[in-house]
Amino acid sequence: MFYKIMIVCFCLFILIACSENQAGTENNENTVEKKAGTEKARIPVEAGIVKKAITKQEIPLTGIVQPIYEVNVVSETSGQVKQISKNIGDYVSRKDTIAYIDDRVPLSQYRQAQAQVLSAKNNLEIARLNLESDQELFKNGDISRLEYENSELAVKTSEASHLSALANLSLAEKAFLDTRIVSPISGHIARRFIENGTMVSAGMNLFRVVDLSTLKVMVGLPQNIVNQVTAGSSANISISSMNNKKFRGTIRHISPQADESNGTFMAEVHFENTTDNPVRAGMAAKVAVLVTSAEKQLVVPDYAIISKNGSNSLYRVNQNYAELIPVSIENTIGSHVVIGSGIAEGDTIVVVGMKNLGLNTPIWIETIHN
Picture 1: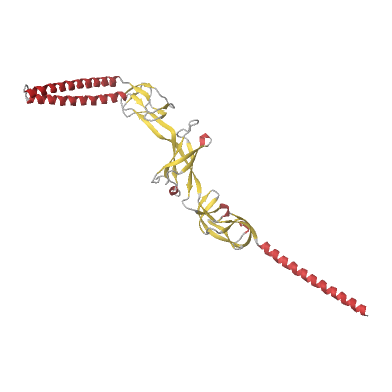
Picture 2: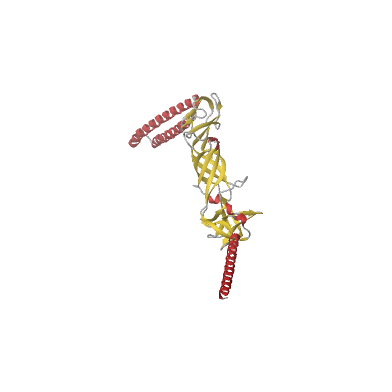
């Protein structure tokens, strides 16, 4: 009997222990399921820290290459062209003679003026010698004061005649030299408007000479960047017709007044030409003006911005939640945007994983990008 009671008690003990273990297992499973449910509710994202930075960007513009120094060679005399010594494309140095005009009449006038100067000079010498002689005679009382004063007046008249002859000689010399057409600058002959035998007159264009050693491109600066560009700012230039050959340029001048036709401010971008494969005037050029912000700005990646119905927003991290907040964009620089308002420096924003987020969504951050 005793043994039967012991067996029954042992069985009851085993049944109670099994029930407790089963209950404990069920409680643990419920706890794990709750935790798993909480983790599943949070959306994995990647985040970044909002920082301020000096922004740099290239503003693409276009223009036509022009020579900085370009001169029309104009005739200062009239006559027939006798010889042309330079043709289109030829290089000339400053004061090189590039054409000759019939000089027979100017040469005769020049020689006549030289003779007049020589004659006036001789007359002046004679008048001075007569004055010296009359001074001695006047001291000795051999001539009157009137005769002596006439000798002085003769010297002054001879001096005036000599000066007049010199002036005429200068004019005649210039008229003769004007028959030699010279280049006022060093460069290449770009245009020739005359042929041998052409009758030219004063003021007529004969040649055009361009200096291609340093060139310029005229570009229009938009109003939103003109105050960020100054004389001395850098620019990158590429020539399309030369396989986009690159040149480093510098902005030299900026107009203080906008162009009435398009509202842009004209700027001169200068760059040095090459000698091996020179750029020619009139070629089309692409100009990238380098613009640097005056102060640091809030910058975020453009892929962090959500644009919808004309408004922009992004997700800002607040503890373990991503909040959708509106922001204003001031500018787009490459793959980044400049934020005007809506966030502050040091804020954490979502940069990857926004498509699964709502207005205020629990998240967990996988990676933070600096």
